[in-house]
Length: 193
Image 1 (spheres, rainbow, N blue to C red):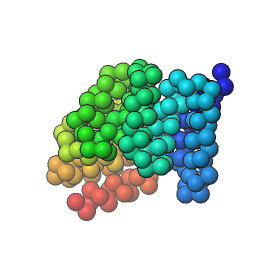
Image 2 (image 1 turned 60 degrees about the vertical axis):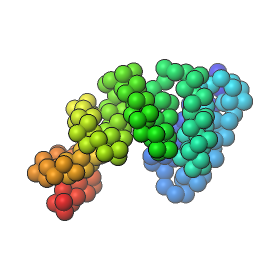
Image 3 (image 1 turned 90 degrees about the horizontal axis):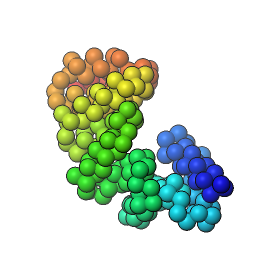
Image 4 (image 1 turned 135 degrees about the vertical axis):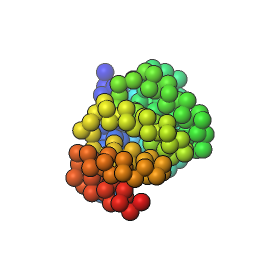
């Protein structure tokens, strides 16, 4: 099935663009991700994976959140059981200011994938950003429990603890960060607070 191959390639390229790529790489790979998502949709207009990648590209690479949201909604309609696409829709929805709707979607995502550390981390980020600090702490600790060696999970927990003026706990959490670069940044934040 070439449609799925193009869709998965586009998905991998979009994740590379969103999380790893440098400026030059991002500039080169973003159009490739878009082209491969469009190829997949030309072959299979009902491809939820390709539709999801297209929505992510529209939202985060083209900075068109409203179009990205509409496309991601269509992707979720095509495959309502795909937690990754629903997570992306929740992210865009939150950025558009519909926080309660975004959090409700993330609860659905976590119900589908309760052992996914990244989703718990993302929920913690959402909650922290929306000012729900105590709930954020629960989700961030759950993410760390599920994947204790993950680099960066503790960074957001340190932020939550600082917001709660629990500075000694923030320092202790920062000291446990497995990534040396993140550890230095977290310790600096906790000390400055």
